Image (cartoon, one colour):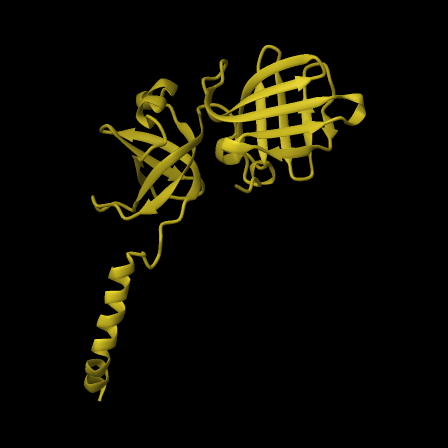
Length: 222
């Protein structure tokens, strides 16, 4: 009886397969994911070990930029651990490993900072900072916090404006302070640490203008 049931449904299965081939639509289209973890270099190949995991994924650069060169400039090729925050797709490793990660975008690369231990990352939508003089902005869906030397951290409400080409504008006029933060998708290198970020930042406080780098946090919805 099972044999007869299988045989009788074969034409229907062939018809369904034919329809799938005809439309050309994959049953499970690849999904972009964001992974953070430690990058390592072995025999000229890059591997990513995600935070809180023992598995390592072979890293394939599919348009993120020259990842191998970026890691080398940060010191990763000489053995220094490099923290990476990347977007891409997971897939099977043709060389038999745990899997491979096809990286399509760099959010950040760094050898300093909290990395996997950043407890604030999931709550932030944007983190921006600059040097000489130092400044930083931590932005969450509930407000932003401005940090500057010789000033107490200042919490402010803000308005967000999303612009074409992935640009972002944040503004606030609370506490008699006119603040404006402009973010542009562009490779940005911190001139003190060498860390790589995916956003160029410009902060305006009244008539003052500061520059720096930024990246999206875990609470940012693209």
